[in-house]
Amino acid sequence: MKVLVTGKGGQLAWELEQTTPSYIEIISFSANELDITNQAQVNEVVIAHSPDIIINAAAYTAVDKAETDKETAYAVNEKGSEYLALICKEISAKLIHISTDFVFDGLKNTPYQTDDTPNPVNVYGDSKLQGDIKVNNLLGCQAIIIRTGWMYSENGNNFVKTMLRLMVEKEQLGIIYDQVGTPTWAKGLAEMIWALISRHSGIEERDIRNLSTSSAQIYHWTDAGVASWYDFAVAIQELAIEKGMLDKAIPVRPIPASAYPTPAQRPSFSVIDKTTAEQASRVETKHWRKQLSAMLDELHSSS
Ligand SMILES: NC(=O)C1=CN([C@@H]2O[C@H](COP(=O)(O)OP(=O)(O)OC[C@H]3O[C@@H](n4cnc5c(N)ncnc54)[C@H](OP(=O)(O)O)[C@@H]3O)[C@@H](O)[C@H]2O)C=CC1
Ligand SMILES: Cc1cn([C@H]2C[C@H](O)[C@@H](COP(=O)(O)OP(=O)(O)O[C@H]3O[C@@H](C)C(=O)[C@@H](O)[C@H]3O)O2)c(=O)[nH]c1=O
Image (cartoon, rainbow, N blue to C red):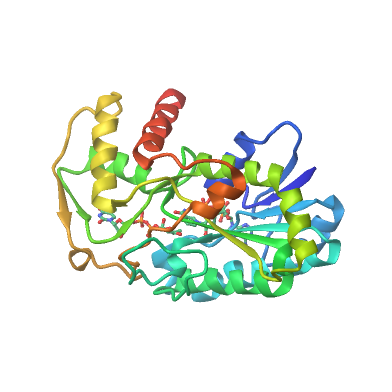
């Protein structure tokens, strides 16, 4: 089975490459090699390689910058997704499209279900939602949309690596406690995606036979548990000290979001319910602290 991955060099695309099962032929393309905002290039590269599945791990992910760079955010997250969906339709390839917990407004206080109504509070979230809508409308059940959140990896820029740097550079940190979600190790998400692919051909046939749904299958995936950014930062510091990655602890203070103004508003609650993804992939989520510890071990041994 041939799988084409966009966004090579990004956190998820990198982890997908590290964890590819032997029966999968993976071909990954960076933004330079396959710019998803360039429809002619998308068509040319995809037709040349004729994949069975495309995993769209490319995105504009700079949440604050998106507020002033809207054009690029929508070009990548909406139009780029649309171009991929169009070519998937033409060659009958399946599209696994990655989306975000930031499509929700954060006003709930119980985990978001896959059929809850999105209502993004920032440009990044809306641009991702518009991409999801295009994918769903063009491909229906030929597409899978996986929403995740608070992702980090050994490779790339993320909250964990920012904290490890700031905990050396600064004398103290103030971290928001009133935004709650669940961290996700990109490696765990990559492994779940491969498990889903290995199981999905049967599910797809059943869905198509039943014609019970013409909509894209939506799954939610993060690690297990709940945390505020403050809880996450405290755990990063504790584990990094325990593993010899930081010499000393600095004070980490819980602060309200109002004390840390950012260009983009962020949802105050973005915990998502993973049940359907766990059932479909037969992969169980692991607690975020356990995953963080495992990622820090890998980061430590590779540095
Ligand atoms: N990071 C997170 O916390 C979360 C991410 N997600 C979603 O998960 C997916 C993967 O995210 P993640 O791995 O963290 O993302 P990264 O920001 O690490 O990587 C995104 C990749 O997309 C590439 N890219 C940007 N523009 C284009 C373009 N026009 N054409 C092709 N490639 C492009 C980037 O290339 P370059 O670096 O050269 O610009 C980069 O390699 C995305 O859909 C994201 O929205 C969802 C929830 C949380
Ligand atoms: C550096 C720093 C950040 N923060 C806060 C700001 C923000 O609310 C929170 C996280 O900041 P970041 O900018 O790292 O994370 P952010 O880019 O908002 O993360 C989001 O990225 C996109 C791509 C997603 O899809 C989301 O699921 C989510 O992961 O931490 C502090 O409170 N103190 C600090 O010193």
